[in-house]
Length: 298
Image (cartoon, rainbow, N blue to C red; front, side):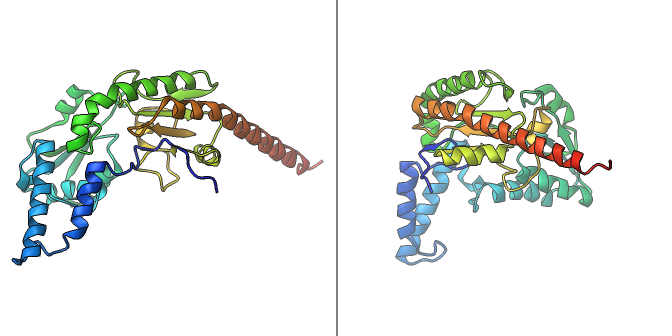
């Protein structure tokens, strides 16, 4: 199996930032129970408290407001369900139509428990209208869920992000321009009001998963669909909310060290892969047509 050489799925997973790797190595050695009083436990507690303070500083929050979880899905679930559990009279939630399923699913599960959920739509660029969002808020609104997109491995990324963004934006523009030359391909998102490191597009008459596998065979890793529907056969609810084409959707997202060569390599392989798949689809269609005609009564 060919090793992946061009990784364009940073929106799903990225390598550890050097600072994060160093912190992880320190944490691995600090295996004492932070709730105990012996020396190793106190050192573990100090490391935990320092981590909580650094996260709080990066988010502009108080340290006692930071809760560590096993990952983003659990964090989103607990944020929605936790707020609801503490609710008394306020039993109304507002969510955007493009929230992660980790937010939408627990919100919907609250409806049979007497909560009301208002879903705010987006335009064809995926943007929420602030006025529409504000109008959905009521006196009994408990929680408003609206995702915000920065570039953060928190403390480090909050410093590095502004410096990286212009370069990543140029890479995205290079990719968008190249994609525009491919027939029957639609690039999603606003021309300027979007993440600098991500480009999403849909290819007509092509299965996104099949295209992903062909590109993988060439050593190029991209993603088909949205990050929250990767394990299902359902179309991306984000693209559907935008009124965009959901068939054959692909997402390319850059690591911090991505280069023009990565973009050019994708653009060099993509047209041929699309053409091959369309030819295969046409042959399959013709074969089915012939089989259908041969089975007709004479």
